[in-house]
Amino acid sequence: FADCVNDSMTQAAGDGGGGAKPTEVVAETKKAVSNPIPPLHVYGELGIRFLPEEPGIVPRGLSFKINDDFHPVPFETPFFKGRMVMRIKDAIGAPRTPYFNGKRRLFSIQIEGRFKQRLRTDRVLFGSSFKHKISMPRGASIAMSILKSIDSALQEDLFAEKNPWIMSPLICAVERLQVRKPDPNDTENDGLGPWRYGGDRSIEEDSSLVLSEEKKAKMGDKKMSFGARRKYFGDVKKREATYWEPDLVYTFDFLSARMDFNTYKVKMAKFIEFGTTKLMNNQPFRLEARVMDENDNSKKIGAMWAFEFCHNKVSPFPAGLQIVDHSNDM
Image 1 (cartoon, helix red, strand yellow):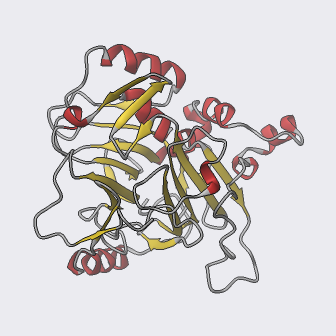
Image 2 (cartoon, rainbow, N blue to C red):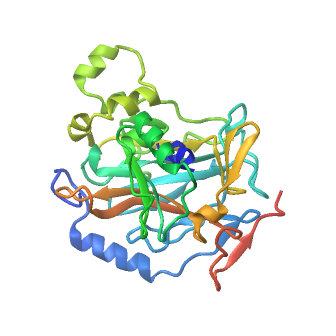
């Protein structure tokens, strides 16, 4: 479980720059909370949506059409504005996407957009959080030690009785990161330009715009790999000196070859897999990018995005929630 979480991971004011004013954030949050929760698009037993109880995510609780990767969903929070697609390999009833061809990947969460304010990279974390205690398997402590030797910035409190979590700085956690300058001719999409992905078109790692001038000079024309980026920004001093900038466009692809959300099973090797249903303790798996307080890095002040992977056999869908079943669509 811990290894799969690591695979999928990998200010309101004070850092300078623009961003939403406190009154604007409150108004946005109240508007989101008052909106009814949309229907859940279900594929087999699986439905994925924005976390309804996370304040400030607009549209609130929106459910994703899986593998519809030519049509990104626009969204906005107090810290980020962008668009995204959700891919799950072999999701029942979902269209097939060439994205997975020739790859071992089992899911992909691709997000593109712009930060609404300047944030130090050490203040934005990505990973999993849970409402209730989870049933950690035997040997989990050893697994955590191994993971922390791979990702030195990884933090966790998975054994907590309440609200367990596992997080790493976003800049270390995301498996693919591409940073570019906005399109100056695009006025409709906030400088993002047309959606350039879908099908077999996926992002290529290019994080050069977040690197220091000294580091870029040393690398020359070489691109930093995910592993090299994770190691480089594992140094907290480098994270503290680096910012997510509002005047750049960021594309993230969170992916894993281990977690199969169709079955909630973790695939460790070709013939080795195990279920996580009992481990979840009757609650859905969640992924979020949280923003921490400038003066207290243990205090969450909001989220850039947050999702939950609802599975009817892991945690029955809430009573009264409207379901749109796509299982027989394809």
